[in-house]
Image (tube, rainbow, N blue to C red):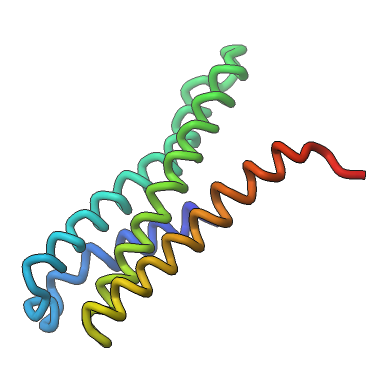
Length: 131
């Protein structure tokens, strides 16, 4: 499911420069846009990479290698996806409500992703199994 979402986000980002309102972005927001595109493209590559790895390593008795590499790709891909969605939030809020709202919304998005994708899983891991 994440793979489809990141592909849609990346596709959406790649179409933005061809929209009329894109020219209204100032230089700093264009920089945020380019960083966001980079994060989305890298996230797409990392989240889809395990599929290719599985094809190459299938029936080669390299399950440990595959699982370790896929875990690292997925974790890195999720982190980059969080950055890409945060960047997209900043760009949209800047276009609609201004820079202050963009920075607040981007900060909230970053806190949200950090909390649910990093802090919560680590705290659950430390707590160990329940029950």
